[in-house]
Image (cartoon, rainbow, N blue to C red; front, side, top):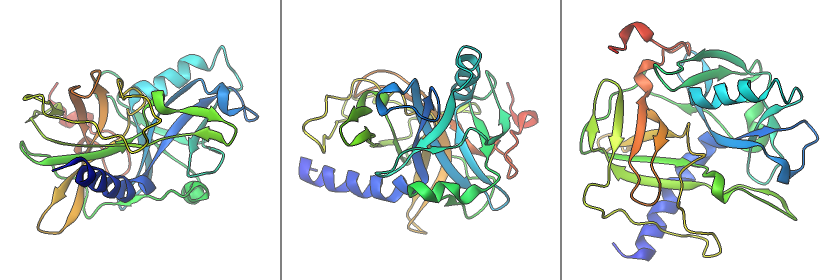
Length: 254
């Protein structure tokens, strides 16, 4: 597949997933300027059929709580398409798996607030989601912090789509490893610096492609990655989230 074909495929992935994912921002206060972002990660929007959830990583929520004592006015926000971020600090924390499972689930009292920045919830066909299998093609889109930039137009956020094959699956997680060092990076915007870190993509929903249904199946959420194009990527199973957003700790064998 040549570079032009890769770009076309990656644009299709990004366009399919972008409505259901956003950059999650820590801002010093409600009047913050684009250049004053303290930290960023990724938030995924999932409809289990029972609850409409905002899902990110447990370490992201823990980081927010660590910063709050020294920054009492800090706010949590999601950045949309060409709009100033929507404040979600009032989201109820349903659960945080901490060191056991690096996922956190939240819900808004008015879940459709995310529509203000062009976002919507990915509706799953059943819950709990299926488990990924070795060899399946996994796809995701998230927001690396290194491509976040303040400009005259405001806060520039750039999504990065990733597609790779599932290398291994255990009770704890799904792993994507570029064993043969054949993974390539495709730049849609030549002005952007080369992607050397996936930091900021924590919380990105990960899907596998269902050839029979010609549809995406949610399987997990990225929680850790190495550095560079060939970084190993670790994904927490979505199946450990109950339909109400509570984590199923009793079914985790570790």
